[in-house]
Length: 239
Image (cartoon, rainbow, N blue to C red; front, top):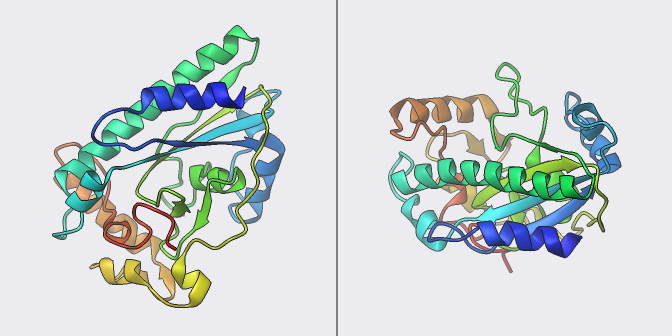
């Protein structure tokens, strides 16, 4: 069953914006661990009765997309477009997987690819990246994004289902150079707005920048990504 899902996801991800995706599987019971960090996080059982698993996948952007967003203070149009198109792609992938699993008698619930957070507290009620961490797709960088073996630049999608799979486990190795060796912090130097510092991420400041970019975006994309582009973990797991 795992391989079939992987084939479906990879069959959808084609074109100049994306590289081959990474697919993982997390037990629905494991998601309760996230509530220790994010108390308001939803449990799979709350959105789907009889939930057994969460399918999660990372769709990495190509070097072309990432390089386009390295210069200037504003996000590149290619970066904005990739964000919007990938979110739409995730919704299509989830819908297709849900229909396929329904044939075998398993119900599924598709999670929105973005805006799963409380605007007042800026905390997620569903964190794709934490699910991906539990499934073994990677771990977190100083910039708070998930670093996978194909880097951190891309989008994560997830789907709750009653079907069962072989599950992954969290990666024990630190992929972030700073967390591993106490050096790098290229992501901090790439943030021109002071939202990301040595101390960590100022969510409120970051959100302000996203909203400003949204108001100026022809794609209506609330994105930035400056701290993730042109750094050692952009496109791969740093050696």
